[in-house]
Image 1 (cartoon, helix red, strand yellow):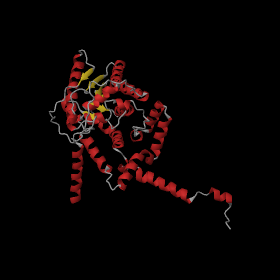
Image 2 (cartoon, rainbow, N blue to C red):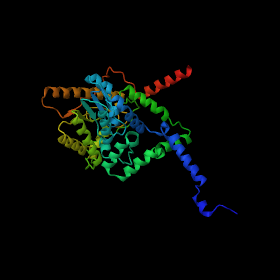
Image 3 (cartoon, rainbow, N blue to C red):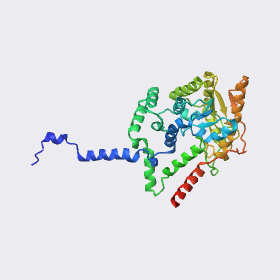
Image 4 (cartoon, rainbow, N blue to C red):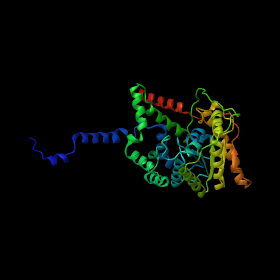
Length: 386
């Protein structure tokens, strides 16, 4: 006979449930937290940049913000050589208008006082909201609690609130895609590699003052749409939350007397032809001009038709080391013109076309990601021999 009263038995916590809670807590706190195997490059870049902004932002005359198209496309050391102005990039992979705003605000709060900022607000990302399913943003890797609360309040989106809340508490929810990829790689007998990739990226970003230099790649297909094809009616529009943060970014910079340059980075000829024929590119250009009308001091740096061929790209939208060096040199020339106009108080150009592609390499040494990986490998091998 069981002498335990029935009511008392109901109050007991099942051992299995207790064990599961302990196991989940152990995994969340001990295994998942800070484990590079379960962080993709986007999350790594947001976390890294959020941590270094306090140390790296001060003392620079030019700061760069935006997404991977700018992080890969502008090399701060080349810009510094061309302009004579110390430069640092705080652009992040998949960077959005809110991420750029919070990084700028944080930089200013730490005492940074640049004379100019260069930012790209890419069309594709501007059209996506902060709770995007197609482009999940790692907000918890970058935002402080107050910043996250502010973003949620601005967005007024319960899905965003739930997403940030869950990801703040449960690392397995935050990194579920990376966990799945890691497990599949292990089951297939393939190396996951992320633990080796992140340190190489850190080294590359540190060496290139926040920029990322991509190595050369094998040629890839880049089909150009014939000009005879009709241009469609575009459907693009800027997401309201992104527009709010775009305005906040420009207003914050201008309130501190900082010149804002909106960078339109080059893409391959094939990619650009598809953009034009989709009809969305013209809608985007119209939108940029509307923002210039709203903010008279906003200057556009346009490199979309500056002759960058497929051979200097790693894919349809991202430049390799040679393309980035050329773009950085071209932007340096454009900035010099803009600065001289400001000093002479002459009529200012607000839409500057970046000079045509020039394959003359700069004198600044550039280390690409492959070289960073090999350098780290060499250091580790030397340590093993000791």
